[in-house]
Length: 128
Image 1 (cartoon, rainbow, N blue to C red):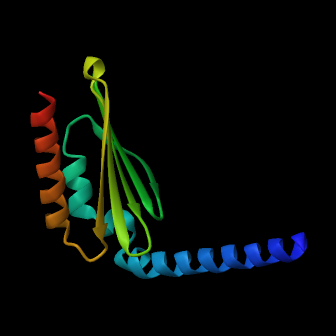
Image 2 (tube, rainbow, N blue to C red):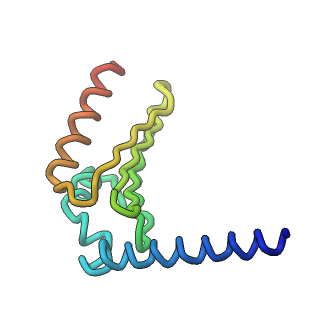
């Protein structure tokens, strides 16, 4: 009984990973990779002089911006039919903060940037 469950679970995981691989191939690889697919978004998020891309994988980009007393991290993650953007910030005495955005993969980068920019400005206004 346990062996049957493990075999079924293994088959499910195999097909999930196979579908994910095919999805990444269609949505990311054919566009020249995640950095190229989301070029405008990456440029927007890494616009600060202290910002650096610190990790890139097939489906993920991490951008860190570290200053003397504060830091911010952006993460872009490509999922099946959506892209998620995460913002984590350590504002020193003002504490740790985070926001998350989920967009359909077909959403224009300009719309993503507009939404992220507006939400960050609104968050900053509430914070101060």
